[in-house]
Length: 125
Image (cartoon, rainbow, N blue to C red; front, side, top):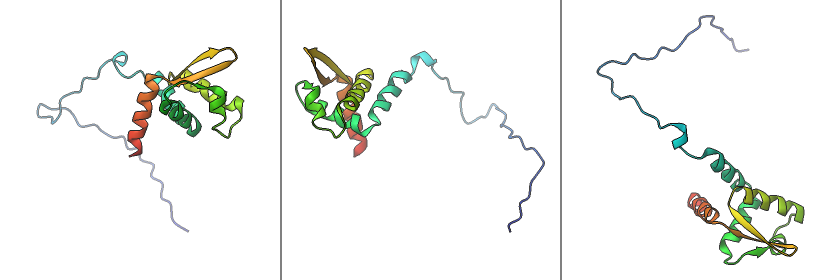
């Protein structure tokens, strides 16, 4: 059986003191309101992280005209309620848009959706 040695001494790391000859200058970080819109970016990344949603966005991005929800549903193994759930998430993330004509909804990729697809394709290489 291996021996375990427990040390009772607490060690606290000490940071080097800044001197006149320091190798680096202090870094100025922009205020949080000037940075990324992390909430919307996280929503987009979360929407893109699902294989079905990514395939749906790809389908809508490659297709020139809006697609009816029935045409989208026919291309996936999931049932209509699941397809509608995925479309709602993509719409909420601003990646697709929709318009109703009677009882049918038509979907297309937004400009943000098209840019997101381009970024994902760049990761694939």
